[in-house]
Image 1 (tube, one colour):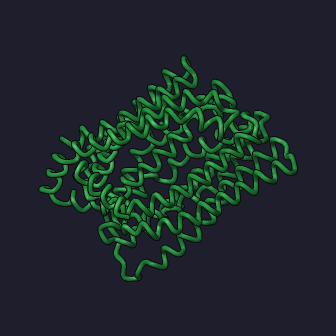
Image 2: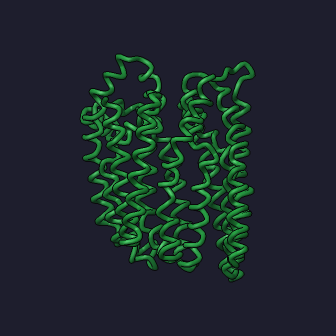
Image 3: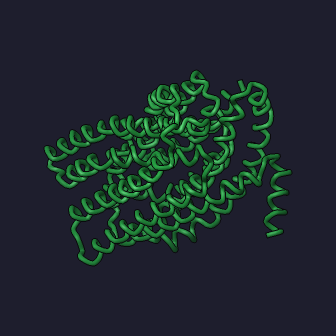
Length: 423
């Protein structure tokens, strides 16, 4: 315990941040992420060993297209809800969730159209997968906003408790589906339908349970933030290109190089993306405090002076983490994903994008500040940089093009908010 306290104090002197607060909040979030990562790792090992690359590539393709259709779920509304709740407007959570549910049925209509087209093209397996997923996805999208409520209230322990149960339900459900596929030797068509159905149901059911529990915590006298919905709608419009850039790599790879290439790429970025999720817990913890500090002009100016130095010092630590991963990656893949050793070099290069990750705190600072002009500039410029890079590089360089495009987009994502917040 004393060793931990000494380490936190040393880190506080180095970074000049309240490490006690970050550690308290991050502990519960990291615990939840750790359990989620263990479950994801176990599932990935099953996929790597018992699913053909083509089957796994098809599965990732469906999830990527549904992820792109997530623009109908108003992705910026979650940030607006978290911001409103952190300022005491609890009813914004309920109203925001209702609006997300209504809007999310755009996913259903789009999914039916895509599925119908695939049926017409003779691809009944993917067609059925899209139709099934499109009916479940709206409930998953709208009811999962309970996480933003607890983040806004800085109740990270409660959020982690619910998150752990959500991870466990999802993990056990997907493992059961994989066991059924292995034991009964299900063909590709039945395997796809089972995996897609289980994936979306195992997310939607826990979300419904925890949403209902969260609503019960809100007082009948709670007030709404008249600006939160408008702010969320504006953010969501800005998130359209960002959402597209997040899934475009997988969609282009699948259509140009096929499902096997997408499977190789998916495993290449899997561990670095889990590392990024761990690091993101710090941004989640500091967002409510940034929301309060950016209410005042004086404290905002102070943040502009102090945050850059802290981010630069923290980048040294993430650089060390990246070096460790690069050295360990061959062993990790040999043990965990032996059929995907061709993904190792892609993964090592991709993880370099994590070095400047601490500068991502300026993304949270921009959102907390609420300056729509700056947010608009960020949310349009960064995705278009990545989209352009992917469109240019993937047709010429395949998987390397996808890795390079993502790295370019990631660097733009870190440094453009820094420049905008400093203005």
